[in-house]
Image (cartoon, rainbow, N blue to C red):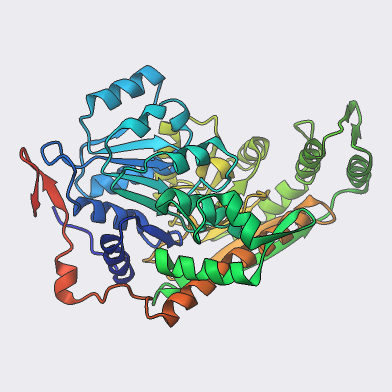
Length: 471
């Protein structure tokens, strides 16, 4: 079987991963960190030579098909999903007949027994262990201490704050910046200002040094030939006066009142969701304003009439309205998984001009690199989802430019979300950029100098009756 060629930056990442015990590949999307992890593990001596390699991959559900595809391309046939009812998952674990086990990030709640198995490696992809209060974070920080090789894969490990780095590296190495608890890390190196925790100057230096020494940090702009150009444009709309009065009243008094609809709440989050949906023209799940729909239609029939595009939405009702009005296929959480795969495959083959996607369902592990244009019908407040959705279009074989269009309703939470995403992106990028600079200053920007002979030697091993051998 002909092996795929690794790009030079992937070879550097591979050599770093071979050198360290617990690798952290903080590589932005479309740089091929999944393939690096697979190749590294295929060259790793398994604990049980007779049974062969056993790796647990934990990732968002939507990213698992991408893992399965990458493994198949690498000739791995002993791959299984730990899915379905608890008894089925336990039977699969008890049989212990595969090399690669794929589990969605919530799966540990169904089968916490995964912590009792003798894994050669545990790979946490698109890192979701950022909140120290979350059950999933506590579980992964506590378990798997005996696993010979733990992995952390993420393109944006700190989308909201540098505080999110601590739980991930405590899972990986048992500590971060010398602290074994994320709470100690926060208490010692951060100061509270209002509701925010701000790093001290000492914290910033220690975090940069820690990332430089413990992780392989790589951005697309740092890869020669991969500095794609991104063009971002915001299209503004305005609510009609009648709906603007409804919006202002809901924002001020926590009362949503329109025609026969009258709702009250004391919760800010409920009100916020009312306002987000209203900015897209919905009140109580009914479309009362078609401004965004008409603007989207005008774009696709006018300036973008020759372009194929992905349309991102935060709400299922947005997906349904666009699909019904414009006739494009849509994918939400209610779409069966096999059908999602077929729709995306047909879209990438050119069958559809546009594809409408609910951002939480399809922002991880989906290849949409057949198009260069994305339209955000309604944005998400999650920086990691926004970054992942943006990166779905990217590919190492493409030069760009890429066009991102944001449909934003003026004087609403749409504008607040747009500004919030820009701010979060700047804060996250600053930390990673300083880590890259720190590494370069220490001469660590290329952990291993890849030679022609060295690159030729990067070959996986195949499974045999008695163990593993070189191909």
